[in-house]
Image (cartoon, rainbow, N blue to C red; front, side, top):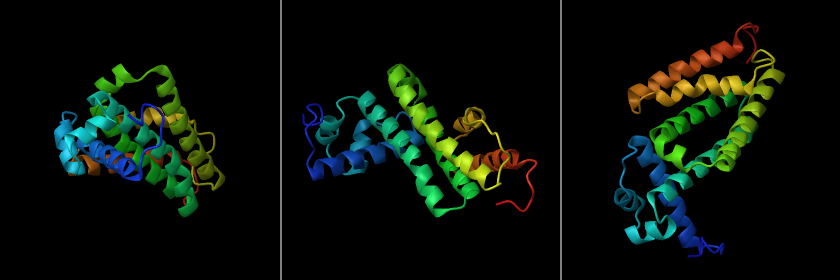
Length: 192
């Protein structure tokens, strides 16, 4: 298998792999019991294609985990390039909340599979992105100075327990508003 021998994948194989990971992310967010066959069908590939890329359920879950963490890390500078710092932070926290709900639904499997190196790599990416967003907000005068990114990440753990669905999304939005209000506490009302 090209992936296991570190050979480059053909363009169509890369597209299939990426589509499977995207579909799996959404399927696992909806239900941690999503079947691999249903994921293959939704991705528009046969089961053999899915199993060539991901021989076990666990390898697919780890691929989704890695993909989401990498996307989360890359998302912060993209947001800062397009939005004001506070809006960037809010949008990033919303993405983190969604990621956390996906991860929470798979927490038992991820806990068993995640070694310290991968967990450290994921933490470093997330905390680095959050730190850059918080510092940009501080520099803009949008949040109080000295906010510890580890504290913010710990507080956000509640978002991972929000139930999926429309009601859960609305609740997560309200809770994120409370977090943002807490970060802004004591700042002049004219700061954005």
